[in-house]
Length: 468
Image 1 (cartoon, helix red, strand yellow):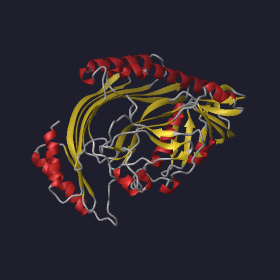
Image 2 (tube, helix red, strand yellow):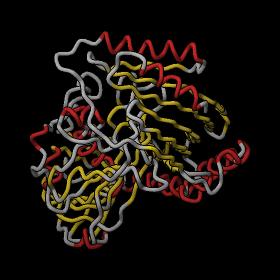
Image 3 (tube, one colour):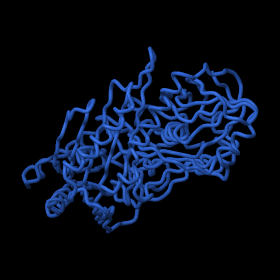
């Protein structure tokens, strides 16, 4: 990347009547491969680079970007960001939280560099997975895709911060339709890793897909109708992960609380006044932590140059912290906790999650179930939905079992959990020791930004809740 052009952009910005400016220069190399039913459908390699410039004046914030990095186009981009900031008409001025001036470099190590891994090696892996999955039979539709991204970032601002970073990411996803007689089910999973080609030692794609296909065949053949009524629920890590993301991560995004996302991704049932109030039982601690090495949501500094750290969203059942960028932090009298993320130079950084999960407890799955007289073990989910304030929600089980007198018995089909966020977290009475993560993607903003995130948790027990 041409560091000089970012310095030029910042100097131009400082020559104008501004309160603040930042410049983000990014370069990304990306490869995508898709197999459909054993046939190579897509192979593409793209290199994309550009600059994003944000300027704050007494009127507001303006943002503009360009993929042309000559001085003439960069000057046009600076002037457009300045023009937008002056065109804003606000009842109250925008301010940013005061943060440390940072000068840092960071990078994610690769044991096997992505740049040294050819397309042929990647194709060999995908065709091997496809061969194993198709050999199971009764899988009329199979899609496997692989994406790897190598992103170089440079951030600098008018306060003196200067941060460089390198983030290599690998993503794998499979989607399989499974058939048994007249019944059809679908299996899918996303894997994500920050690092090099060594990721495939961790992914275990074929083992996971084979297990899912065989489980769905058994479910279609032997699964019974789920019982309904008040009972205990033991929720697996997959279920807890999506619930942490939806009913803790999203409602604690400060921009949602302030109403910025109201016409896009929605609002939040939370308010600033809820900080320090109970939301769940004492064994509930949900964190969002970008600093976990090799994790799909990893970063060392956010896209406003703030150093990343673990954020305690719910701690011992208490609402403890919101996710902030510098704008939302200033509006609430706080400091940024490094939650400003962007999917690329052409998108403005907004408040986002990273790795969101429930901290584990000390119990095994057997210990969690042996104390259940009548209940459901919802090991994974097939679908979910939640309202735009993240209060009322619904989760439908995929791999699920009935629990009777402490024993996991027959498979059941599609148990339904409908519950509010406080009711869910207050019903938690024990957390397992099997913390597990799942890669996901999260959409937010306009234009939409699909962000790499991770979510997870341990197997968790809830008491006396309604199953439909």
